Image 1 (cartoon, rainbow, N blue to C red):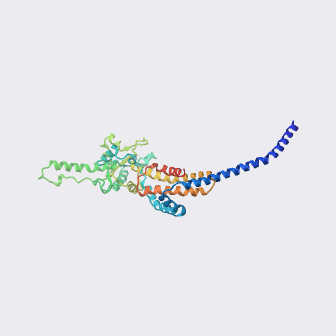
Image 2 (cartoon, rainbow, N blue to C red):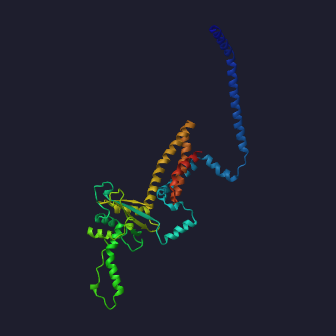
Image 3 (cartoon, rainbow, N blue to C red):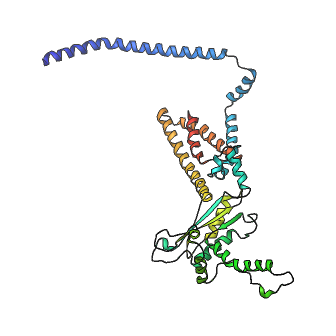
Length: 371
């Protein structure tokens, strides 16, 4: 059986050697014929293209560009350089607040503007914690005068003109435990003098009847402060203080600050950070809509600067994988980078508001540009 198999193999090899030259000749002929057909098609294509009528303006415009390709390239580079100046404004144009998502000329948007005429919707909250939050052996109460004085100092730094309604310090109001204590400290004398103004006849104006105006400040006596808190209903007090770890000591409080309309939130947050500084008896953290807006803005810019290089590298890898030629990186890369710079440059130059979804714009533009 093996002998018969080897004999058939030798016969097949002999037949292949006889047929192989014919196959090679046939393949070479087909290849030559195909090449001739392609050259013929290219020639006919050029002839057909030459027959297409082009307007005089198009011919006048395109011919110099085709003959001198460096000129349009230099013009585009100049436009890119000019547009790149606006990119520096992109960071400040990203908004994370609610209003950027509201449609223009809608009832809900108009109502918000109407509400803002009498009330603020821009709220900053400072979350105050004592060391008791982390260490139960530390019995520092949120009502401790040292804690209240640190809270008061921050409030007075931010709202240094309490009666200006935000004209000079951009703060409309401050509501907190310390403001309540300061009001209680100054109320008795003001109330007594007001009653005397109403009850005493005009001809009687004896200074002996008057009380010295109470100081709008945190008292220096802890007993005085404690006596004030005994007069406050527990339901009202629970709205301002909390015992977060359940050990019976009030360890947390909130400072609510109402902002004026159209306040520069970034600048105000810098003032807040400067006002908080280093504290000895409590820890204060800014939260609420305004700080969250700032965090969203910063995070969006950070993500965009991270996503954009990654997307460009992946696109470059894909192009090189398909074309196997580094020149494709220049051919596709120059228009791609140019369109990104022009897009974001124009947005920045025109100060257009951007939502956090701008992170998605860069890779989408890059992908569409390559396509």
